[in-house]
Length: 224
Image (cartoon, rainbow, N blue to C red; front, side, top):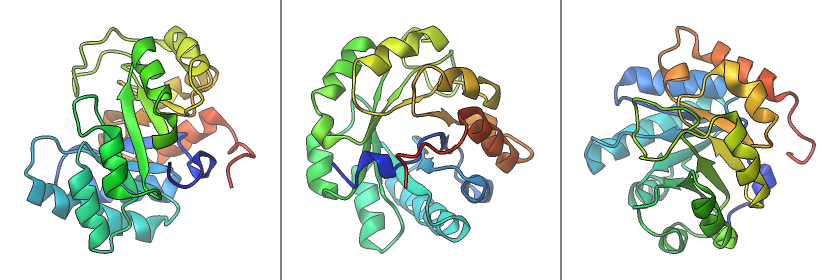
């Protein structure tokens, strides 16, 4: 495991889309508004282009808010390369078909942040069995989303309490979450919500982030 889990502010977690300048600018705006995590996701681009994007996002986020953690979706190798170049990249988010968690941890080291996608009770329990290697898990979809087809049934608000109760890992809800959902999801015990379109397509990304943070209330005292 990386730095203590309680050092992570997962309340508002941005997953980027796109590969252009707007992606970098929105990531910086979200960080400036208080997003605790920015995950760079660009599944259709090449490794070289993804690395360039990660480097650009990491620098923009570092300038906007050095406390925001930058993660790379799916690609521990790209995260490793960015870190090797001195970028403020803090880890990786893995899917069920990506490099196994233990191998990603071996590659990135004990200080890296590693998250894992889940969404069913069985997957959450399997992640719990790897708790010493993980920092958090994502769980979804909250509702059906056009950006990613998981094949899993939507959880809705009522699906999260059972998952939260089955693991000591912090859970981030994902899947067409909007800022209006934040308060209800906070009440389920999840540590935060991941947003894609709600932030990336917003006229004022920072305002969306601030509304999500308001839905979760003050930063819990366990966070530094």
